[in-house]
Length: 201
Image (tube, rainbow, N blue to C red; front, side):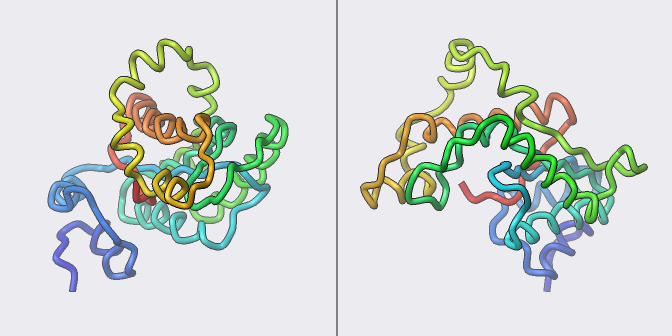
């Protein structure tokens, strides 16, 4: 039986969606007292999503159904780098045209689950290419990169598992988690986003 007081966390707990939460009491209180804006990111590595993505799409669905605001973040920028998580080797580098076409295919899926602003709802579809593709690398390293500990990054599963298996991890892929973290900063500035869902690292 759930001990949560908010509709949002109660629904997720009842359906078995919750694996781990940072500061559950604070999140529960926030979900009861205000509208939470939260996101999940989806890279554009294929023209459609696979069945495993349904779980996290349903997190966004239940977020909206319980009175909150979901953001489906399309990784138009991070797809250019490639997520090292769960992979034994580097992802294939995709052209900008392929990423764009994949993004168009993926967007169609979300309209079946979320009600977006243009359809009278409050869901947002954002694309991290809007801010990542124009970053000044030196400024980004100085202003953002200095806050990341390489020691801590090496301990994350997405990196550690590759290194433990003695499989190559490129510098490009190693930067993926910094770009992912920067997404949160931009989503907070642009949309008031306060929660990321669907990831462990």
